[in-house]
Image 1: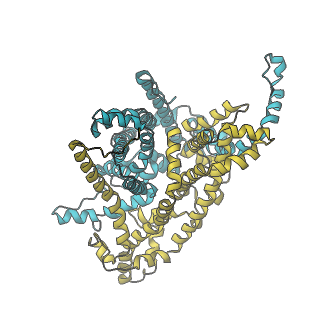
Image 2 (image 1 turned 90 degrees about the vertical axis):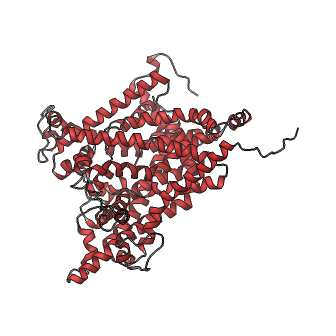
Image 3 (image 1 turned 60 degrees about the vertical axis):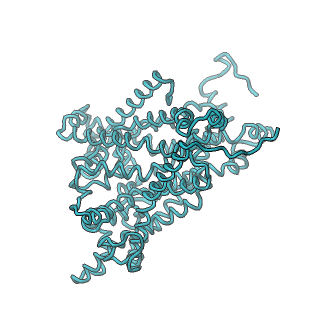
Length: 315
Length: 306
């Protein structure tokens, strides 16, 4: 085994060191190559294209040929009359979603863990994971079918009880509720996996000791399970904070109708319709870049705060 | 001293808790299952009953009309085959590429810090939809089958999960032993790591596979040739748009020539939507149910360490 030598002279020039490294590890580099190439094509090449946020991109001129306009695209966006609505819609949707959907998997995991019979536990788990595999298209399709004002089950129930049909998919007031409720219905079950895994890792001795001390189930939950789940939950929370201005474009695009635009118009959908639909490439790239930077700054900030407060952090 | 198994007496509080817990779960399971059950029974019911909201617990006036319409829908069937191909090819590629890189990241080598940064950086900064679109277009990938297979080939998140799995589950002793025997990295990877990676392979297959099968957006952005469309993108036109469009028109096309035919077609179209859902989601769900014992454990481990 070669020992690492001390003097720079002995280590040789950059080229020599590269040559040595290559000889030892060429197979590693080979195994890494496909992944790095793929990531290069789909992640780094687009970064080159980000410069059009600072330009006035015209397809005929290409990326390098288009003229620089500095921060014009950004100032245009921040001063647009619809800017506040886009920002509010995006942020509020994510905030409410976080508030409502975040606790559910934790709660479910704790309750599920209380079952003594393994068979019922396994059976329940199988069932609650199923909706996660339904595609967003089918989920939206289910919404359109069940909530249809004329044919939908829900409105049949409402009219049978004497009410009037509600046009769920067209009224802005319903968009967020439906969006978040279906998120929970679809993914809360699957998201328990992380927490259940944590709970199964708890030392059974703790439970036994608690039982001997006469603890009730509720007390065990409060004093054993929740403290164990807290670090993981905080980490997931930090991760989620980093995407408070992100857009679940896939889902919002499907659920958006001309009627509910007031709440459903989020940044991601705007970028899609304006960028690809109306070819406003530079403008929407600037928007995307701003959001990216803000999200990054937020996650760094939240991480720092968490580290100062409780020593738990992602990095 | 032999320990005797005694049945511990449960306190009153615990008994109440257990009953409430059971009730909660029964309600929750009904909330999960009922919409899915409703779709299944509506798909085999008479269209009029479905539209009138009479289908509640059981199929009413059993009818396979909806399924007939689905299996006559050429574009839908072709997109189904497309999706199967894209998903299988794309997932196979993703899993192989990811595993190779994950293994590499468990070894020490010159430049490892750089490579780590290279991957992790992309988790924080992405070009975004438009730059990616422009670059892919300039590479000639627009409207190609190749793009559908290779796009987003590597998810750095999955890569990290796989790397952690390999580094914790395949002990270095095996590596040392193999090196002493004169094996090189590739041999070790193929002969030792891969056979022991069954669980992470299953997990990666599920993550990548489901993601590809359910994706409608990529083709919406990049594909113009309707013959190349995957299932979900076609389904979107049928299920998730309030206005009629090319694909939902197909359900009407056979009856377009007279009023009575039109009404008949509209009747069928509603039930056909339920059948579309069953046909597109059914296989995925069944596959999950049968395979779940293989990958759920892996997902648990992966999510903890990842």
